[in-house]
Length: 377
Image 1 (tube, helix red, strand yellow):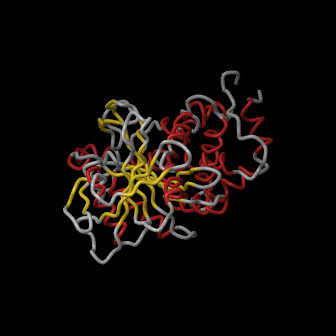
Image 2 (image 1 turned 90 degrees about the vertical axis):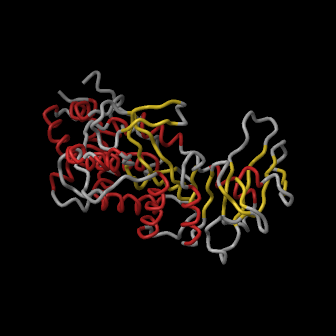
């Protein structure tokens, strides 16, 4: 019997998706790996509900393929970096990126043995959850905000328990990291691989330790940035003492500028970063103050001191990748990874990112893909 998926696939694969998967998966060394990769991306795009491997295989009319898909994701030794390089090129060719956005994504998990799983307070949820945390870099363009690379956060116990590391197939030289450390690694990697000009780095690090270290590292690289920082981040007025960032805006010399026609105002003043090269230009600290808001606005630091406050406001708005992360989790199976291994997680995230990018940036002008239910199959 022909399932809804196979009839849809037969019609659709003669076009864009086949060309897309051929391009994205071209560097996989074996024909069977490219075939499994194509099937996995097709399933993520067209199967409704939870994207478990069993459901993907059933939707393809090949329930016996579940074992092969599982092996491809979790055990096959293919390198995910060439896939991400191809995805980066594909996205850059189809959208005019305006910023590189760094953002973490919490993936709730059961159990204690999946690579990197730990208990973490997630501000977006307002509670502590058992989860993996991926730190992603997103190209924020005129058409979509698309992830093109990921790091998996490995908290402390993943440094110490060799048995746990071995079971999760974590590389021997890979040690515990931080969100800000991964952020810099992602920026450096994207700088080396991108075919486009370097874009401003935008991130919300208002709940992260080490934000000042990242600012100094980006400034030393002369990379433009716009970063939301903790209230207490040490900053230096010029001339003046080292003061927490929120307190600096109370000093004489703070400028107040209107935003649009409403009550909101931008409060801004030049600041230096303690420990940064004194020869580098001063940064600019600002916040959007709205008397109608219940909470004070985020604090931002940027080295784009000549930019208008209107453009800075537009760039700051790009830090919100919630809708992208929600779509990745709810519609494209980001949280459906069933394995425990470190390579498996990266394989899965690479193909989820590819499916999302295709759905957002495909050349066809008709509606986006509509997932097909497997209930009637």
